[in-house]
Image (cartoon, rainbow, N blue to C red; front, side, top):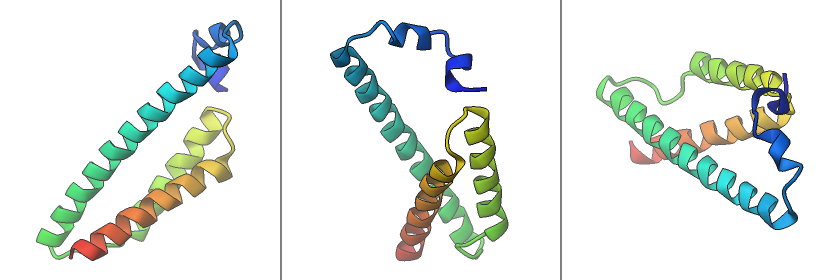
Length: 103
């Protein structure tokens, strides 16, 4: 299944001009940043719980679960899994660095 198969508005994109398409990208970029901010907030909250419980910063099984989910979602939406996994690897590493610095 690709994004085109899941979204009724994708057909409308073909009728848009270049400026409108660029505005659509700008809107998506804002949404992505908002989602990253939300994810970071939750990851920070997880870090606080780990610290209170004296748990290690790194949880390899959880990281693997995140990567597996990322790959499955990439396949679901017909997006390059390597690209999606690279983005998630970066998000995980950035969260781990922040967690270590705050301990």
